[in-house]
Length: 263
Length: 263
DNA sequence: GATCGCTACACGTATAGACGAGTAGATAGG
DNA sequence: CCTATCTACTCGTCTATACGTGTAGCGATC
Image (tube, rainbow over all chains, first blue to last red; front, top):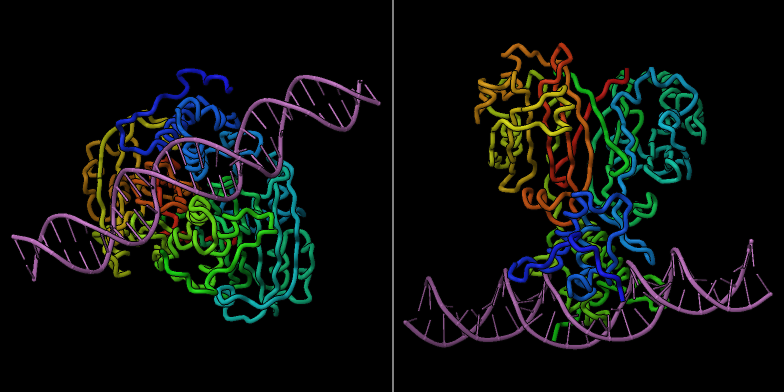
């Protein structure tokens, strides 16, 4: 026998309403969360408790939870319970993060920034190889057939937050330090400039969508968390695209920030 | 009795797999969609047909569908069936869309752009009123207490794609044409400049998340479609924030594009 | 020939029950 | 005291059934 729920926490159902029972329950739970009656990380009443409280079947309660999961509000732990999903600290990406002046230090922007924020950064699953360019990448790089691809995944305090692939034309990257796992201080942009490809500007394209099952695995995403898909193209002073970077970020870990002239 | 499914379209279950049955079914449907066996807008086999094909109960099939819905891949129509969700045409928002040179015409950027793309633009639910500033808005505008709020919703070919609220300090907006439903040619930015607030730059903050139930209604979002939340602050040449625009966009209808200097 | 209504079919909602499996605390044994 | 096990509780998966409600096609009636 489950103990009774603290009274007042959740209301009753309205049997005259034409709103489905499981939606009414979801509404009440959502409101309780919004009002802070359940705090971040706190455990919601168990399925059994809600079954008893509302006098409905278990599947009905589970339907309610599945709504809230889809909204990214809660998270279910097998054997543990259903919890209010904590909002993770967000990483702010400023639009000037690739400015030349930030390229002086030895460490990558990701490491520097995370250290400053007091979190533990990590980069893993590094892969560097030559491969056939996809249709999209080929178009963006100006009809190249094969490219150098640099893949890596970024973690903060053990949590994967982003994975990215840089694509570079072979005639630029082959045989240079760019083709090495460690591109050296200032990253590949510093190397590109040393090679005479002075960077002029970047173009960034931003989309948001639900993750593919692969992305869910790689980023260990909870249900109800979208991804931000960012595609950045770097152009040199001659207008030639010299790199395309395809990045998929856990949307709950990021806020992007851009500064634009009003001209 | 349901007619048998075309053989070869979908495979069989692997009873030795420890992957849940409803996940296996979802995997097969997802793969069939990805491979183009079901095209955009096309109807998937009905629940009853899949029940028969796989020899499972209806709830199991429905669980599979609910996975795909959460991924934004399919869409269920009551009484009609489950369909592959068509990818709507996306609107590209360029970072220079508020540049002064685009502010000459009489029509708003949204209308001009949509006309050019051959779609039918619409703006509705316009509301202009003074109200108390939220904590966040107050902070962004530099500790103002009350603001003028301009709310509107944008539709393309009858589909709501975005709704936005502009907040302006009362000492700037009150009594001017900015407080009128129709702000006149060039929009409120043109009026701001006429009033002596020469615009210097914008700051945009971008987040992606799942929509609230309210946003689902207002934007008529299908399940599995996130929203892009964009907060733009306009600064005048004295560094004072003169407007904050809070925009929520259907993520499947937009791609944002920014051009950044490499300096 | 337009309309009403029937009907088959589709998904939506809800119940009841069964078993599986992960978690965590209590308990018994070493 | 530490460990292994037991057990209660939790969510996960799956079946079977029933009825509600929206859709669309067909046919009969006016």
